[in-house]
Image 1 (cartoon, rainbow, N blue to C red):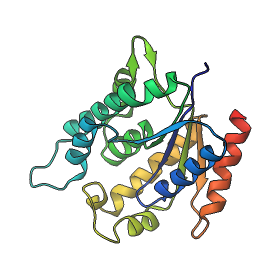
Image 2: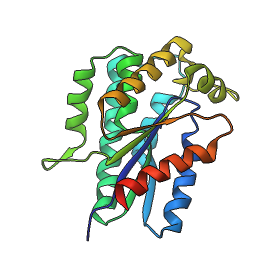
Image 3: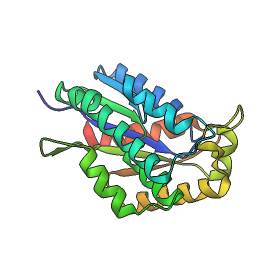
Image 4: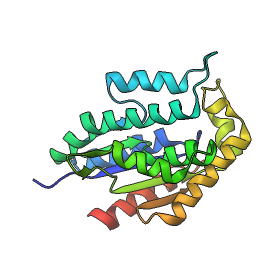
Length: 210
């Protein structure tokens, strides 16, 4: 049995990731490809606790170090309990966010050393000398002003409430990732162009894997 494919869908807040993931699920279903969907942080009982820690606004603020370690802990847990087993079963894994989010948000957004993030991330996703990395990453490239306005229409979580300058740094971080990582495919954000964006994702999958 061949291993499955591990696909990340990434982008700034308000980029429409969830919509594209749902369309991708429909596409895989039509092709009769078994898959699981997960998210970061989240995807297991413990990971959902981590998610609440980093996204809920509280009087007690997380230190930058605590935030980084919480995201990495959630990643390690979901990869060990969800991603790795699914890939070994030959299933595809579609994840809402992954390591690029840590580089973009905690690295570029918060100013934590990118080399340190990469080193810690490698440790967090390595099990018995096997590093579990995505086969392909789609980054929806949405302008910070557009995405943040959409994301905060009905209130803002802890990350969304950090202000426009923070989110501009995040988007710049994603764009740097796009320019340096061959596994990363940019998907330009198109207002009222959901299917055009989906078709670009599908075309890339067809070229790479079928």
